[in-house]
Image (cartoon, rainbow, N blue to C red; front, side, top):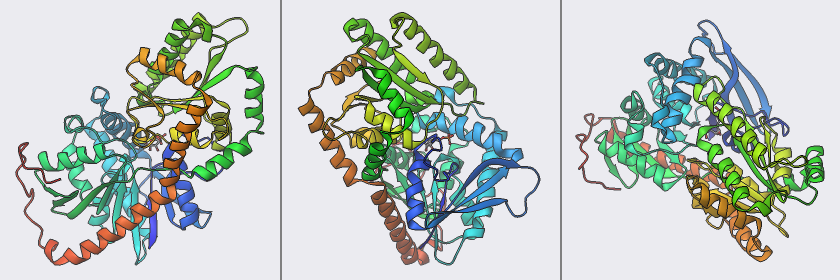
Length: 486
Ligand code: F6P
């Protein structure tokens, strides 16, 4: 199988390159080892009507990376507009933040169509396409329109929300119907998958049986593939990083004080405001913890041109300054706030230095920081993970201290508990989490998805005579009382 992987953001594989999210970090080792070709945005735009999309291609381990310049006229409407001001808030259950014009939607569709045309260049007789994330919901349908018959899979890195929330996205029916051109759609959790199937059945009126949706495109299988990391490789990175100058400086600066760490993109889904309020509350309720623990919060700027992100940046900065003003002393700063990105080679060492990892999103697809924090720990003296029950990772890492990020007092209490947890309990919880990480590695995720994609193709071939005569659309009348088969 000649695998073509597609995502908006890509990574060039430089360990010191700041990472702005989990997807790029996760796909990198897969492309390097599997020999896939990874196609994404170069981050640059190009004017004019490109007949042959401009791509810069470089080797990436056994694979290759192709970075495309996206069309200038549509980039803003696609990325800042429809993808990140309509889909992103909806996917994270923030329907109140949905903002998108019809032009944004058209630009989103244009960029999906542009990407489909660009992919033809990488198509071979035994190709399979694996499309990543919400930037390209309609890419499968565009590829089919261009005559592509090879297997096409899609994986969503974010959550998929309840029907009523996704229904707040302009053109949701058209878009989700287009998604059914995929043979296989992968989700992070059972709940995401259930939400999607329930939309297909109740809103699109389609027949759903055992996770398979029947539509005018044929059969689409929806299934759960929780994304993992390479825990062994990350642990090695963390051991090596202990001599990194930034990590050594951090350790020296602590003077025996404990450290809690948070590492997030500066995004409203990450729950930064609630987390900082929880630390504020903890120092107020337990004044003896002042000077004994500080929080290192790395918040990498992201999507700054979007109003909601600009507002968040100033709100977080103001709150940090207020909390430091109240609890700080002449020689002690409670929150060390860094508004920039770091490469994984440093982050791994920072995680290992911290006695508590705080990963408390309001809503998150998986959250690989949670997994990386666990993998980076010293097995002899591991730190404690405080994890939101609304992160996909909570399904597997259930021996972390699970918190409700909306309950500030509860979080304050649990962070204080994490700081005083005895070594035996810390080890027991950590070992159970490491066992889960070892059982669901990124390599396993890749193998599970690509195997399932191959099976879908076999099913499609077997059913070819049946789906050659497409059923009338929609197959079932849209009806909330329609029987559920899944
Ligand atoms: O969660 C979805 C995702 O694609 C992640 O991989 C990453 O955290 C983030 O979104 C990247 O966002 P952007 O490319 O807009 O910085």
